[in-house]
Image (tube, rainbow, N blue to C red; front, side, top):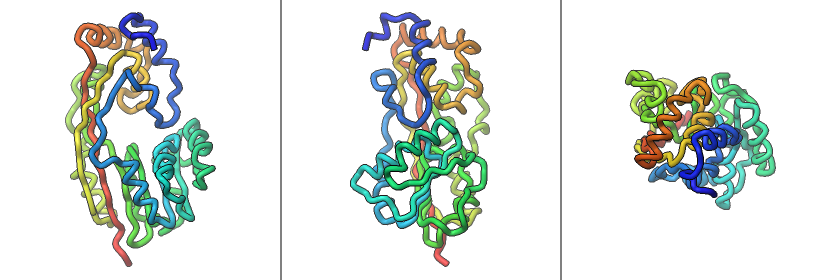
Length: 262
């Protein structure tokens, strides 16, 4: 790949704007952005849970990459296995990836009731759900079943968000706090088994990576377009060129909850 430092702002922005955004495959960012990994290794940990599950559901599966990776660790697919996804391009991608693994992908909006009967699954999983529906999760879990997930925590990548939107109120991401999610899960009748939080270093090495990230993770800067934010993009490009990578921090927490046995 040609060094980004020899390319113009316009070239880099055009490249970031042209990359397809479906799915949760972040391999395009290699060499252009980095994020430290969590100590718990969610996808590998999920593989261990799948190994003992008989009926599993992955909520907001994206393009199905996390489930496909987990099952690629020598784990058999549970007898009953389903996944939900709300964005049509991701539904198509997840179906192509997961159907050969024996997983049925169901198109379902992220805020819609889960389209499954009560007490269907002994494992419900999710990586980075937009907003977990605790009552629905509790409803579809069998007694003794487990919810195993990695959530985005409060003020994740807010250094980048605030570059574009200015200072953001603390309460804006209060719902993502681990203590708030613990309370909400318990209010739905679930028992917290494990809850761990980490903040991780992220580096953006060029403005193309910033553009692609904001197009892909659409809730960071709602309604983001290159045209509207061109001045802020240009100033960030000049900053990266003169000072080096733009550094931010992501917020992640691992959450395992159990539905009490009958």
